[in-house]
Image (cartoon, rainbow over all chains, first blue to last red; front, side, top):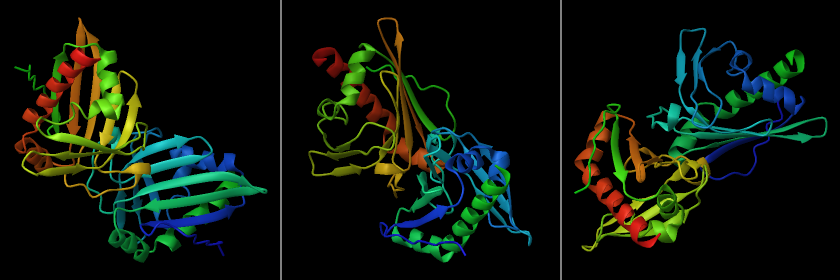
Length: 161
Length: 161
């Protein structure tokens, strides 16, 4: 079972802190190549198509997911900060070149990675504009979904990178 | 009269391109110190209070304007890009530390400065999420308002910097 460590957070945030048993360099590699990212990005058996991946501030980050039942989830956005092997920030509120968007779910996500023992402390902080959006995101299955993806990331990084 | 040069733009954008008779270094200085910025930021006799000014990517940029009739305009946001003497990008959709906001007017603004003759080509490109927001911004008096501020900026930079 994943170590689902729900830390104290701002009331508008959803936060997951995990000790991942993989080196930071491998996790970063899985995060910085769209051909690798698509292999762990969404809970299987859903699949990810990476429609845009310009990993720099203001660069497009657009994933499109498909489920086995024909369901889809379209998630355009952009990167806000990219610090190699340390920190990635992205948002659904802006697209390529900082253009404002009208997302179906408004959030900015901060992912940090730091060495801890033999592994990596991996923290995802997802910020929302208001409590209703935060709660809706949680009710959609945020913790199950993101924890599953982190577990997939861990397994992928250990086996393939 | 200001040289109101309405250039061709994306249908979701409002763009002003002006040849400003002041050196780029002075314009930048007027843009990078809140005590200076407040002197030209909004059309007089309205006044500006700079409530936050952390001029770096993800840093808060919050102005609060007051009119002689008691009217106010509250405009929180954050900087997205800051390239000294060249380029400033800010948005109303995110606040300090990239936190999502719920702005009364959704936009991102790109301001660029480049040497041109004895002056500076000053271009403001304001992007919106949809045509309705763009049109509402224009109907609120975007061109008059922003052109007035650029004229104030030009006069301030020539006289005081």
